[in-house]
Image 1 (cartoon, rainbow, N blue to C red):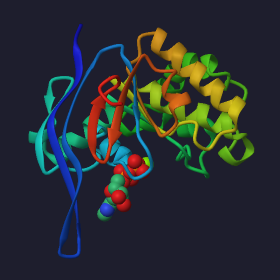
Image 2 (cartoon, rainbow, N blue to C red):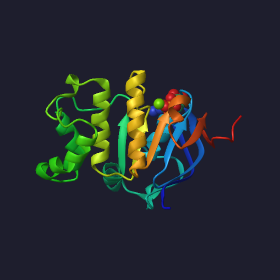
Image 3 (tube, protein in one colour):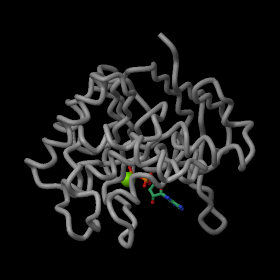
Length: 228
Ligand code: ADP
Ligand code: MG
């Protein structure tokens, strides 16, 4: 097995005026290729902050982070842009699609950012959009789609670059029960196909769809079974 994520003793605080608030406290996390991990914790526990660290979106104060053997703690900002684009597929609660772009334009965007041609990127997307049932929606705008369809577009966009991990923050949070279940079934399928998934949630029922649950409580991580 190969290790995709290795975080060691990550600390992160936010400066609030003259006060420094410790948000992540000595967080260590290892994720192997092909794992499906849920990070479960209540509101305010530090989930989104941790997602920003895993996704290389923000700096941490101390600790080490290796993503696919790349030392993130030593990486330069320019290098981090490439890492975010190529190694991580982000999925957010509120989809974060570009409203003026079509479905296809949204999905190909990460590939175009890498410098691929539109023709190549469009070809590359075909299989993914088919698997996600979006093939007859490609020229629609996000506002013309249901919430579940918009989330599937966001999942397609995350997948096309073939990232090392899919990183999802409350992916079912904006969806009704049944649509949320459909998205979770899709995650299961993507994991069965070999994708490594980290899903962040406050909902135990959602977390139970993953193979492994890690709890975050007040900025500290606990493997499930270690807490009462
Ligand atoms: P969760 O996603 O679990 O709800 P967050 O990671 O968003 O938690 O927030 C954890 C804590 O950090 C909260 O107390 C929040 O108020 C604080 N926090 C988050 N972002 C910032 C920021 N940019 N500046 C100051 N405090 C922040
Ligand atoms: Mg959050």
